[in-house]
Length: 180
Image (cartoon, rainbow, N blue to C red):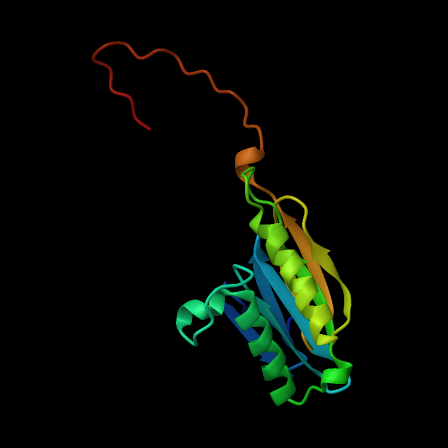
């Protein structure tokens, strides 16, 4: 194991917004970065198969177009179905939910809507949610091992929120050239 917590044999697969990935390869680790988006991490440990999705909005028109992929209803169905097609059994599925952070101080909280949708969807499907991290402020980086169901997250710090030291520059005289 190196200092990143990853072994030399592990293969990282990044899951972007509107996408999902299913794997039965024990060397695969799925990664993503979440803000207000939500990721469902799903596994059947007995079958040794699992996957992750990453959705942007809770619901919208699901019509089979590429735009549908960003909605939770589509993302959840596709991930569950693909895990089942890969050998998982519905009664053994275990879920973890991540994301749904509040990214901006505005009137609407998309992250909270995404988180509530994901929790409701899992309850309606009868799939137990064994863990995860929903809500809060800011983003998170997620690593998920789909065969074992292991997950690790790290907070993503907003560099704009970090106070920088104030630098005072000498005044520039007329006709001088300032390089930056």
